[in-house]
View (tube, rainbow, N blue to C red):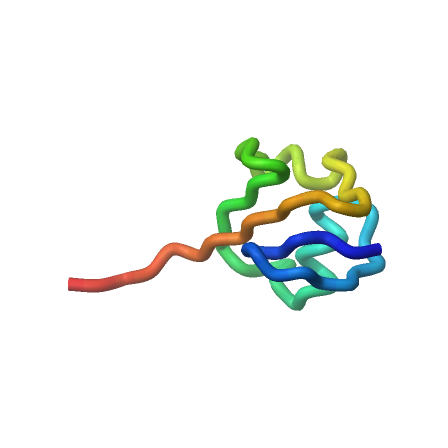
Length: 65
């Protein structure tokens, strides 16, 4: 299926947000996630479906000074 990942079209096989993070190699990363502009908490990711056409945002915190 095709989703929009951080604004770019991407073909993925995952059907949940948790599985998508695994597919992208981000399973252990500290990230914030949103599906169709709605924040998704870490504990809700396994039950959050990913369907064709979804807009998924994945953001990692950055350190700076």
